[in-house]
Length: 66
Image (tube, rainbow, N blue to C red):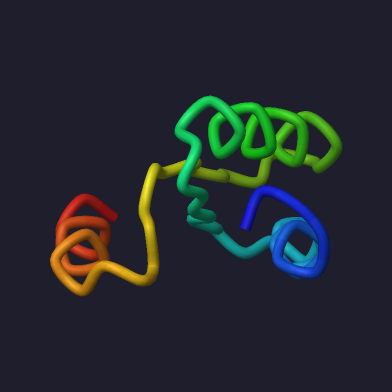
């Protein structure tokens, strides 16, 4: 996620060198969080994606995109 625990986990994984995709119902929030996390790491790749995890179809689309 773009906030809270999800963002913290995404930041920790990116800091450890993982490529990370995070999602939020708000595309702008997802992209902003991804850019901020990416900028605070040494070369990690972070992708922000709009997705409402309550919607199975949206989750499938996110997985296809990622």
